[in-house]
Amino acid sequence: MSNMSRRRCAKHMHRIKQARKDEVIRQSRCSARHALATRREKEWYDPTSHAITAMHCRLNLSSLDHAERLDTSDSVTANDDEQLLDDRANDSDSDDVNTNVHAVQPSSPAKSCTFPLASCRVMWCLWFHESGGYPPLRTIQHSSLSRTHKIRRTATQPFIRKLVAVAIKGGYAASEGALELLDKVDLEAMFDSVFAAFLNECGPLCTLTSDSPCTVASKWAAKLLPMSPKLPFPSVDCQTMWRLWYKGDTATSGIPYRRFANWESRSSDRSVAKRIMTHLAQIAVNESLVPSSLSFEANLEVMHEDAFMHAFDVVFPIFVRQFVPSAQAFVTPHKKCNRVAKFLGPRFWSEHPLAGSNPIIVSKKPPVVSCRQMWFLWFQGDDASNGVPYRRCINGSGCGMRRVSWLDAKYAMELVLKYAKKHQRLGSVGTLETMDTTTLAGVFDRTFPLLVNDIDPKYRRFVRPGKSCGTIMTYKRRSS
Image (cartoon, rainbow, N blue to C red; front, top):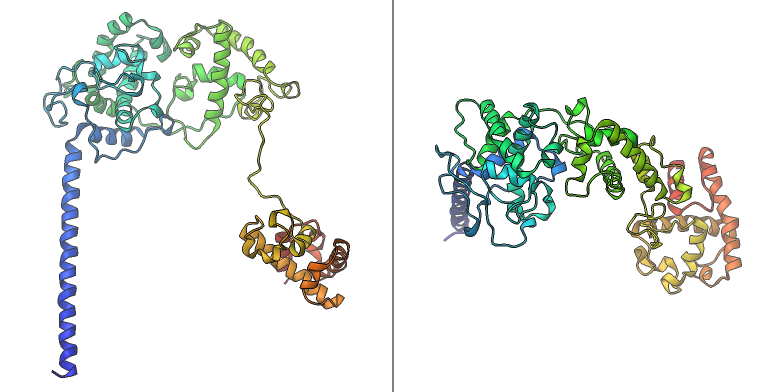
């Protein structure tokens, strides 16, 4: 067989192998697309994941609730001992959404770390009152829940938010704080009227009942909640924020700022205000101005205006006395919260957990070494380098310098050395390592002005021996 025939045969075999590879890749892509289509079809018929995803899109839930992005490929079902819904209730396309549901009874004793699945009626009571070993579900922190239970909590919120809005609009309660203070009997008695008003808003196509799963009702609630733009959290003084935090204003339609969820997440003003207002409320509890309970902040929401502002006049002077005398003049009711927050550290505030411990503050930035100091380190070293000259610590290895700082020092020292060799008849660089400190200092002090003379006149005043090597090199480059 000739060489040409061999080459043709080799090319033909290569084409065959490449075609086989392409076919394998095509089949794998088809399999991946088929798997993706199957998973999406499953997600569509999964009530919890699909409903929550839709609600996130509809409500644009705020990050203040720490809602996680859902991975809808995971199934959100209860364990065998906490199963609340039958298979028909777990199917979002089921025609029968009136399946009876009861409060879940999980086997785990740590119920404060779980969030149950429940019917609309049961969830209404569980949200505000302790029951069946559960604390009020509104008090369970999002961060303390597992991923599955975080999803349940997120799925429940639209339903509760809508029912609370209906209750306030219908005159059944003055605020959400007033609902928290109702006893369980009054809360249960109110549910039927509030739920009926909710169903009336849902329209004739809604087939929900009070025993329907709360997650199913949340889909209807999500459609009814208004879509409003996110608001920037205002930066105001402490006295004004006290009223806004617990009473709200027209911007939030009377919803207290601490409950309003549609804030812009970029601002840190809300977390600062929350820290100060919560501490002031705790002082009010300590002074017996409001009862000590899980709903102590709700008591502030329902207080009469005069009593409410009187409480502020009592607690704020106590708050001021918790600061060191030098800081008390800067902590006033008319200072903005973010200004007051600057004094909430252990150095000024006696209530800080680290107050009195004299914590050692370690700077994250390395100390700045001047060009003159580096001259000695470059040729003689120090304790950090075990006496090894810094010029021998390549890229800062062995002397604790960062590579960038070491390179800046290298360029600056070589520049000074260049002028020294030119004007002072220096020998080898090794002679500088054997010089005493006084002689070495004299070489630098006579050479540095020569370097400055070659700098652009408009930059010369910035080029001084006390500046860092990086600064010296910056102005040298600008002058060239």
